[in-house]
Length: 166
Length: 131
Image (cartoon, rainbow over all chains, first blue to last red; front, side, top):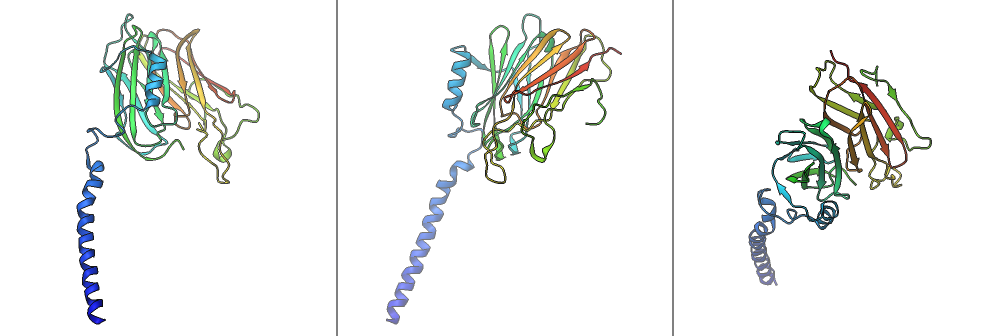
């Protein structure tokens, strides 16, 4: 009886150690995705279907190329209710070529199209600044639409603490 | 709001419009421009409106859903010319703020009109005067 309990305790302890080893061995695998640097690919890096649908509806098959537009937004936003954004372009404004609109998209917001800023040549030569809400960690995309029809884009992954959208 | 720095507040509060938390007034607008403006310089126009910008997804302390109530259209005119138009959703933060550039080519009022999804219309004006 006494022996049995000792044996079972030893077995129990051994099982416990094995279990701990198994857990220790298993945990790094499970935790690995959070250790991947944010600039590497993850499940959130793909555009969501909502974003694709919105882009197709708004821009059709027009090519959207990365570059020229500057999206200035904090990478770490503890409060999703208030995330400051600055939109700018590095192309010099001319009467023939100016930004006719900035479009602001957040992949994982309830409404992915957050805002559109339609401008005229009278508004050339500066930046647009505003403050947006974000539901959770997500890509924020800016698209600058030129009067010539060219579309330039930029994307930043923003890590959000508090849900600002509900 | 204090004394207006530029322009005069023209505020419309629609009857029955839900008040934001704390019962503060909805729709007090400010349009701020630099005090000294040189002709043909690029100025920053800053427009701020007091508005709850409710998304419709939150609930109040009693568990009742707070209906969506947000500014969805903003127009900016400079004199008689419309120079900018913003389409917004509830994804813009409460008390929506926007700053945009404007080439000050003439002395004329800058008029910003905000419209919300409940039919509220709020406007504010600042006048460009060259030093």
